[in-house]
Image 1: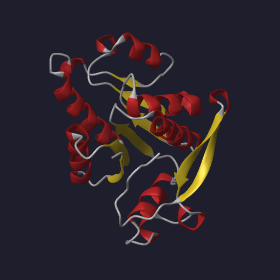
Image 2: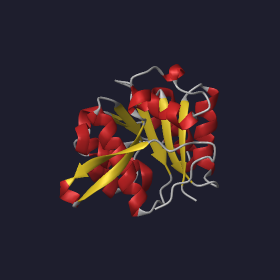
Image 3: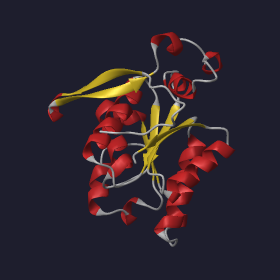
Image 4: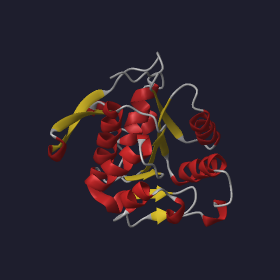
Length: 203
């Protein structure tokens, strides 16, 4: 399983999240303990990844997880484990709907950890979602619908949805391919609004 990060970044340490019903333990990247107890601006400014994961370990943050749909199962397991760990640490995970891929994995992990700490922002309404996505959303108390986008092409509504997700978070974790136009648009918007962005390239 390969996830490409920018060459200048160093990998953080690895912890694990247990999923007994799935028969496995998944690795979750975390910032080293020495960084975790400090403030974000105390991290080495040359170590961008350490700074990003330091932000992850700060308590009670709103952290968005979004990404591409066509993601292999091992990557989905990693995303699910990250979302699970974040909500167990008291963070709120924000994502969108999806029958597969990064968003669906984030939803599974958030529900598994604590559904009360999961927020799902939809590009349209629950009724506009496929039946499998509607089933996935059962039991999630915090769902934000946007019926005003219902008449738009889904691609346009999705871009607006990603912007709403970015507006609601302090940090964006995004899983994408280099040619993922919608995800790159979300990154640009996040950076314009001074959000911390952690990119995981899948190619």
